[in-house]
Image (cartoon, rainbow, N blue to C red; front, top):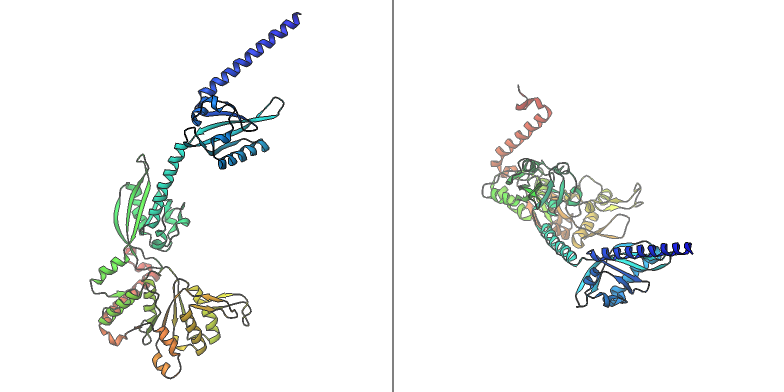
Amino acid sequence: MNALKVKSSDHKRADKALRTLEERQKTILEGIEEGYVEVDLAGNIVFCNGSFSRITGRSKEELFGMNYREYMSETMAKVVFAAYNKVYNSGIPNKGFYYEIIRKNGDRRIIENSISLVESSEDHRTGFRSVVRDITDHKQTEEELEKHRSRLQAIFRSVKDAIITVDTEMVVIEANEAVENICGLAPQKITGRVFANCSTQCNKNCHEVIKETLRSKTTIREYRIKCNHHHRPQQRVIVTSSPLLNRDDKFMGSVVVIRDITRLSDLERELKERHQFQKIIGKSSKLQDLYGLLNDLADLKTTVLITGESGTGKSLAAKALHYSGNHALKPLVTVNCSVLSENLLESELFGHVKGAFTGAIKDTQGRFQAASGGTILLDEIGDVSPRIQLKLLRVLEEREFERVGESVPIKVDARVVACTNRDLKEMVRLGEFREDLYYRLKVVEVKMPSLRERVEDIPLLVEHFLRVEAQHRTRICPLSRPDYLP
C-alpha cells in the first residue's frame, strides 16, 4: 500500500511539473512577436498564439479548426501544400518560405514561414508547426528600393559620359556602358580590378586626376586631357573626379565622369586655320577643302574612292576617314590589290574553306569578315582582274559574298574605301575596268592634290619631318635628351 501511495504521489508531481512546463511554454509563445501555429496533417489549425491571430486578423476561436486554405487564394494554397508536403516527405525543415495570406478584412499580407514536423513520442508524424512573420512592409520597401535602383541603373546606362566609381584603393566598383565607347574598356571586365591596371591603350592621364581626389578628398573639375588612345589618337576628354561618400558621409573613393570633347575640340580648331587633319600635313586651300570633305564623310558608311598620283597620301586620307569617325575603335583592314595574284587576292578578300585548293589546310577568314563593323581599304583597286571586279561588284550591290570553295553567302558589315593612282574613267573607256563597278566605287570621290599644287605646304612638311627625325634620334640615343644632360 505504501509503495502504491508513493507511486501515485510521484505521478501527481510529474503531472504538475508537466502542466507547469506547458503553461510556461504557452506564456513564452504568447509573448513573442512572431506568429506560432500548429496544424494537423490535413492542414487544420490545432493551436496558435496571439501574434498569429493578429497577423491573420482573426480571433483564436475563429482560427481553431480552420484549414489553411481558407485564408489564402487557391493558387497560393497549392504552393503552400507543395512546401508542407516536401517537409513531410523529407523530414527537413523549410526555412524562409514566403507566401501571401488574406486577412479577415480582405487585406493581403506577405508572410515568411519556417515549417517543421510535429512528431509523437512514438516518432509518428502528427502535424506541422510554423513560425511566421509579417514581412509585407519589408517586402514593399525592398520593391521600392529595387525600383529606385532600376531607375538609377537606367539613367546610369543611358548617360553618354563615361562614369566610373572606384574605392580608396582605386579598385573599380562600377562602370557604365559609355566607358567602352570612350575608353575602350568593357565595364564587366574592369569591375573589381585596379583601374590603373585596366587602361593599356592610352596615356593614363586621367589616373592622376583620380589619385588627386583620393589623396585630397576634394573635387577636381573639368580637367582637359588628350588621351593618345591607340585607336583614337586625337581623342580629347574632360575629366571630373569627385569624392564618393556613403550615407553617413564617410569617404569611400571617387566618382569619375569622362566626357568626350573630341568633336568640340575639332570645332574649336576649325575656327582657326587648320594645319593638320589626322596625319595629313598642310594648310593650303586645297587641303582645307579636303579636311572639310573628310570630316563630313567620317561618320558615314558611304563607299569612297580616293584618287591621286603616287605619293599624294591616299592611304593617309583613308585612315583619316576611319579614325576620325565613330568607327575608330573598329578594325581598319588594308588589302594591297596590286601585289597578289588573282587566286590569292580572292582568297585574301573573301577567305576560303578547307580543301578549296591545294594548300588550303583549314578554314580561313577573309579580310571583309575581319573588317566587320569597321573599314576595309582596297589599295590599288585599278589593278584587280575582271573576275575579282565582278565579285567586288556583288559585294557592293548585295552586301554579301561567298568564301572560296563554299556556296553559303556571308553578309558584309564593313565600309569600303578604295584607292588608286590610275585613271579609272579612261580604263572604263578602254574596257579594262567595269563601268558598273566604277560607279559603285565612286559614290563619293576624294581627289588628293599633288605637292606641286600646294607648294605653300612645303615648310610645314619640312618642319614635321624634322620633328619626326628628332624624336626618332631621341629614342635611339636617350642621352641626347635634355633631362639626361649633367
